[in-house]
Amino acid sequence: MTETGEYDVIIVGAGFAGVHQLLNIRKLGLTVKIIEAGEDLAGTWLWNKYPGARVDSPMAIYQYSDPDLWRDWSFTELYPDWREIQAYFRYVDNKFDVKRDVLFNSRVVSAHWNDSDDRWTVTVEDGRVFQSQFISLCTGIASKYHLPELRGMESFKGEVHHSSRWPEKYHFEGKRVGVIGTGATGVQIIQEIAPIVDHLTVFQRTPNLALPMRQRKVSVEEQARLKKELYPIFYGRRYQTFSGFLYDVDPKPIADTTPEELALGFEEKWAKGGLTFWLGAYAELFSNQQFNDEAYAFWRKKVRERISDPELQEKLAPMKPPHPFGVKRPSLEQRYFEVYSQPNVTLVDISKTAIEEITPNGLKTHDGVEHKLDVLIFATGFDMVTGGITSIDIRGQDGVSIKEKWADGVQSYLGVASATYPNMFWIYGPQSPSSFSNGPSSIELTSEWIIDCIRFMKANNISSIVPTNEAQHAYSEHLNQLGSAGLWSEAKTSWYLGSNISGKKTQMLQFPGGIPAYAKLCNDSAAKGYHGFDLKRSSAST
Image (cartoon, rainbow, N blue to C red; front, side, top):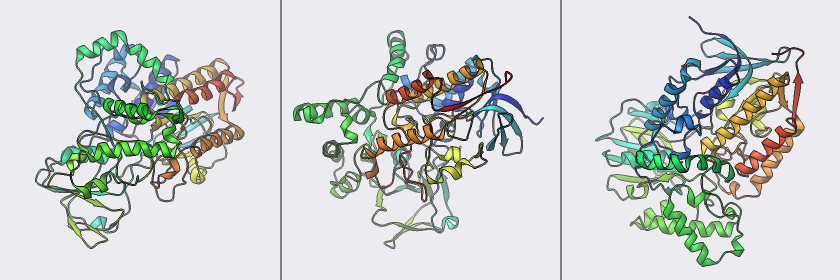
């Protein structure tokens, strides 16, 4: 039977944000449906299951903060892989019967607002139509994958895989494999498959300034002790730090810091591993070029100690920084730099010898060399932050699509809503802290704010809420000013700025001011009766 219907809330996406919204909207006594393009829960971890795929947040805070969930769940590693994240979502479903309100294998293609009855009409790819008062876009920042346009792609006789559309079955043993891209995905794939392939050729445009993960097993007993004493403290602390991690940036001015203090601080943060060297560093890392150069020099020294070949040292950890350290989210690695010393691994610097074309038997670079390949892997990322939203034909009060409006740059209010699109919210998306933070930290913060907003509207007989143009402009300008005060624009190609996608407007796409500052802006608006929004009161309860 074809499923259609009318709901109070329609959620797009069944990852961390979508499931959190669903569970909490149920508590309001409202009708709700998640529409999910995939066949199961887990969001990005349903699609990203390539070799080595794992989180870059410690397991204690890469889960929901609900005690009814964390009390009975344990991971096995400090940084869980995609299999464990999928298992976690199965556990959440078993606990709360999430799937009874999820429509799988259904891609939303359009959402159109009707101002006369304050309803969204949502259409799925197969033609089914749904209506709702609210729509919550939980599409994440990495849902629309990016495949570069390369001449001759269709001629290649071997296997072609994108990291975000990984096959269920694959066999790379004894094969010649090429990987294009050395972002976080590329790093994870490269260090995982290098030991098993016949030959691995990596095509690198920009060196990855990766940090040591310090992965380890975590016992059930250790987690039990943490749950008993520290988990509630962890979840409270998340909202107090710049990034939603348990460590915080140090506001102390570099001018007031001794060289000895800096040196010991670098060593301490490096030894701790994870993203501590980045988001647990001095705040001036993001604005003080001289100090940033010192941090890069420390990183370079540590990495070069692990690489014996001088030519590889310069390719992987060049004397001149490819961009300021930390203006791109660092990847976490386990043995990435050692991989390139293997005799079966070749590193090609495509910033000097660009890719000319894909051939039937491999890939040819501008120096005339044809690299023979059996498998070609694209670790080329996504149309980050905005792509999941602009890929849907969303039209609001004026009938103009959000893709068209954002062609000249994203504008939002509070990184959660946009003018002329009433009752539409998004989580972990444009102009929110998103990838400047631990994902679940900023997801729960924003999701709870939206839930409170809907509760307020229902209690006060308000049928629609939409940002004013003035508030939206002021917030977007504030975000742009925060961005221009930092070193972010010094990165030539950065998905933080949208510059990794040809033709996309270059701008700061995320809120770089930290979670406490972001939370204050959101909470101040709510405390003032949702200042910056136009609220429409209905004549009868909806």
